[in-house]
Amino acid sequence: MSGPISTPAGPLLEMRNIHKTFGPVQAVAGLDVAIAPGELVTVVGPSGCGKSTLFNMVAGLDEPDAGGVLRFEDRSVHAHELLGRVSFMPQRDLLLPWRTVIDNAILAIEIEGMPRAEARALALRMLPEFGLAGFENQYPHQLSGGMRQRVALMRTFMFKRDLMLLDEPFGALDALTRTMMQRWLLDVWQQHKRTILFITHDVDEALFLGDRVLAMTARPGRIKLELKVDLPRPRKPELLTDPAFIRQKRILLDAIEEESMKSFQATAARPAHA
Ligand SMILES: Nc1ncnc2c1ncn2[C@@H]1O[C@H](COP(=O)(O)OP(=O)(O)O)[C@@H](O)[C@H]1O
Ligand SMILES: [Mg+2]
Image 1 (cartoon, rainbow, N blue to C red):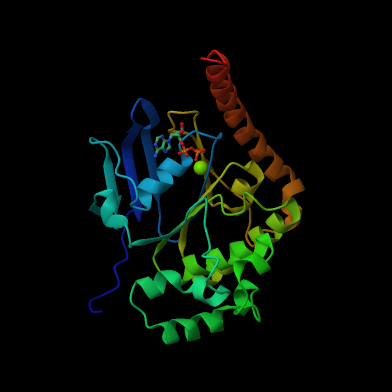
Image 2: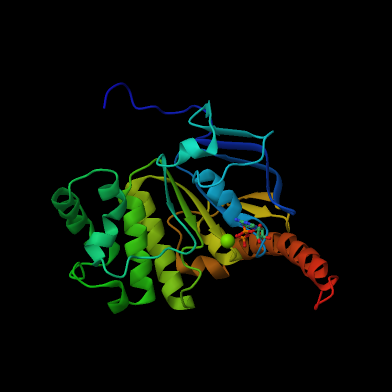
């Protein structure tokens, strides 16, 4: 590696007027998103509004329709060029059942070419921070849901990239585990100083974690509302009942409820047995 570390003056990621259609289905239409270096931006929206579609384009897994603008580190890029340049944890993150905790954690960097012994040594040192100390030789089926998510997150963190994408990482966890994971994620984020795009359908989670919350419309998705979260860090659990938090939550809920109604009506209008 040589040359100065690039610190883009503008946004790290920028999307302008992005559309994506799957056959007859228009998933997103006119999406505008900009993320500054170091920001934790959360995206919230009703189910089916195109959140994962947005994620897949930024992860480089799906190419947007022609016509929009996608920029990364101040350069215009095709989505596929982002593959390998961002780290991501997809909504359905499947740990490989035949690999141990440590070998699941190193999967991405091993594929990238780091020798297994070196990768394992690196991962061993990170295990305590991810609440996995002593579990390195366990298999995924031996772990709780929260622990499996931490292994998946550790894998994502180990694949060191400036931008990290997380698609509903805590969606399948019970409320208590989820709250603990959120607080832990904020600690880890502050330690590692990454830029995070975090997708969720949970308004509390979006507000609790985010510097900014982007609320999407019903499908075809675009950004309906951008809310700067003026809540102090470090974020404490008491924040959830703070009047300032509740006020911002009301704004978000109003926006999302309106969109959920639209998608509900669109579904209900279709004959059930057609
Ligand atoms: N690969 C695909 N092929 C066909 N349709 C898709 C595909 N991916 C997403 N869609 C459709 O696009 C819409 C948005 O999906 P998605 O982005 O997964 O929503 P969300 O993550 O917000 O729940 C849905 O109607 C979904 O069925
Ligand atoms: Mg999704």
